[in-house]
Length: 559
Figure 1 (cartoon, helix red, strand yellow):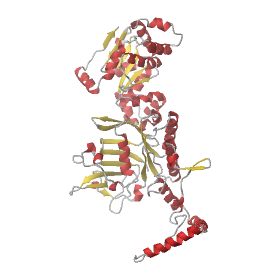
Figure 2 (cartoon, helix red, strand yellow; figure 1 turned 60 degrees about the vertical axis):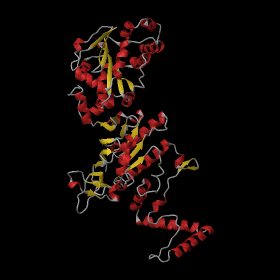
Figure 3 (cartoon, one colour; figure 1 turned 120 degrees about the vertical axis):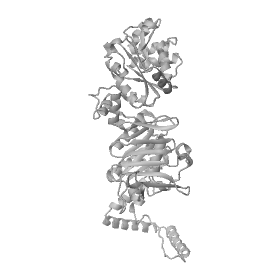
Figure 4 (tube, one colour; figure 1 turned 90 degrees about the vertical axis):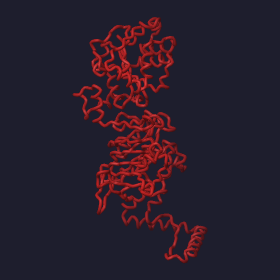
């Protein structure tokens, strides 16, 4: 059984969002701090975690905008690929289960599971432990307390579930054999005089205290639980000859241990399914360890174990898992989420002037998987993105922005090297599909590739492009700019002494451009100031400009 969709309504900062769970792909919740990523994990934990949601005590802070008076109904909906609720003689089974808080006539809050509205009149559902165990959410929060899941503290812990399952499948002959073995172990314990004396005194004290009760009970000290032989199992970590406690594990080790346990369990008992939730798996790990952990998480997801995580690290964004990307952000204090399926991504790209004949639902994911480089994914963690042709601009432009006093980091701007002019529109459509603010910078020189796709995308006339070396043309509304010939030719013309300084260097053009931008603080090409102004514009201002100037002419700025 798999969770396919999960929606959250009126919970903390969330008004309403839905997350899709693609098959064999981790769901990756990314975005800035304090936008509500952890609230999604908490909602999953409330509904599908170890504690039965019907008894969950929601606090004032759990209600939408902390306002339980006006928003008293927290609601979660989980949709599975099989029936989660088994049904009974009176109500049918269902694959979609809802949970909500409701105020009773007495003013108390009643937490209930129920059918979706319009299905079986939205009647209450009473989930059995068996139903609840069909697809359990295992939450590894930022504290990394895996000892809870790998102990018998609860019947819902992963170790408890494994012990029960092992006992279920054990043949009676094996149980009888184990009983004999454990009896021998107990008899060995009883050779210790103090143990035997304590056992006798415990039994005597219990018998004297139980007088007056209806049931006559006996107690026994045992090395095993005869009702479940596997309850004696313990997970012990070893380093060399020494045993180690879980507390001695690093955060990465703890996560891998628990994920490995879940993976092995799911592979052994095919009907047993889990959703593994991890909060910021990159915490306290160096970059190589992050890569290693991200690879293992993807591997676990491909094996069939569902994984959902929050992250601030590009290491956990793998383009192979594009359907699992969920951008989480806030607008006016409300948590929003942006996620694409193959269908919606292809539709978005077509709206952004992608070739309709080539852009199909069945090839869009493969296309981006093949064409997207790892470093380009850093754009997903920016507020605004500057798309450039290649390494020359990528290495030099940050220094020119610095010379003008424009802080790219403070303004949340990421420069993305598209590796060629013809690849700019590909990156542009990907980021714009997730509602990122993008500015595209390119050369008009056709020797580096055609301008036709750029012209189609941004709606300018390719035949009217200005091919003069001293021209920089930009559109602050459509957010693109181009050099009349190319970047290098433009700088040679507008910056005094640039060509001479360039000729003194013996390296390739990329290194020359980088060195010159670093060494000459007085180099302040004005196209940088124009781009900085556009990158500094807020969405509200852009919308105003769009309304006031529907047919904006290209602005030509000669230097």
